[in-house]
Structures are given as structure tokens and as C-alpha cells.
Length: 161
Image 1: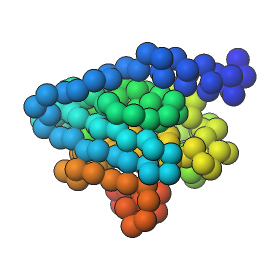
Image 2: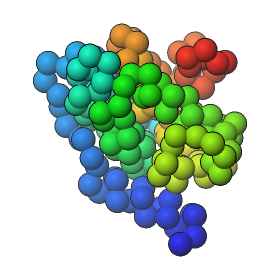
Image 3: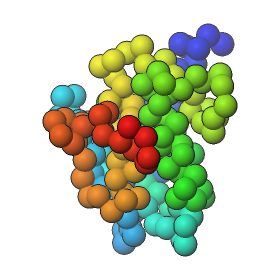
């Protein structure tokens, strides 16, 4: 299957039937992410069991790319350690920005279906908003925005810049 059609198929599937969509009551960590330019606004909520992500959900109003990215992200990090989730966050961000070769070494697996977003500059923020919101939640930051000083595109994640 052609990469572009696989991308469209995955986006449509996860937009129609998002995984882990809903509200998680009594979450140990949560954050709200907002992209004022396109109106994406979503909340990530999770419970840590020690260092492992035991439960994770997302909800809000967002475009298909953002919703599909959030859906695949929650499925990918569920059961993983906080450290493993941070690695995925960094790798996904690097891939979306064209700094990571999806055919090289990484931990992204099926998430590489989003590699083509790097060629759609107006959609990059849509794809990475859930990931930056997860990073914020894991680090007890309750809200992030893609604009101005809060722009996660220009802020360091982990130890990189």
C-alpha cells in the first residue's frame, strides 16, 4: 500500500474510532493542550502505577490529524514507563519536524505513518500537540499552547533543543 494512502487510512480509522477517548476521573497527571491557529484543544489524563502509565485517555475538540495522533499515542504509551514515553515523545517530535529518519533506528513502530506530516508544515503542530500535552502532563505542567512563548515547536523537550 502506498504510504500516502496508508496515512489517510490510519487517520480516518483513528478519527472515526479513537482509542482511549474519554474522561479519566481521579487522574494522577493531566494537561490541556491548545493550538489557537486551528482550534485544536485536547486534554490528556493518565494514572501512573509507579513509573508505568497504567491508564491514559484524551478528549476534546480537534482536527482529524490531531485526534488520530492522540489515539495512536495513547495506545503506544499505555503500559510503558515514563522514561519510555519521553523517548517516544522526542522521537515523534523529531520525525514530524524531519529530524529523524523513519527508516532508521527508533522506537516508533506504526507511528511512522505520521512521517509525511513533515511535508505539511501547517499540520505539524496538529500531529505533535497530543505528544507535547503528554509531555506536559508527565512533568506536572497543566497547560500548553502552540503559540508565542509556549510554542512546543521551539521549546526543548527532554535534554534536546
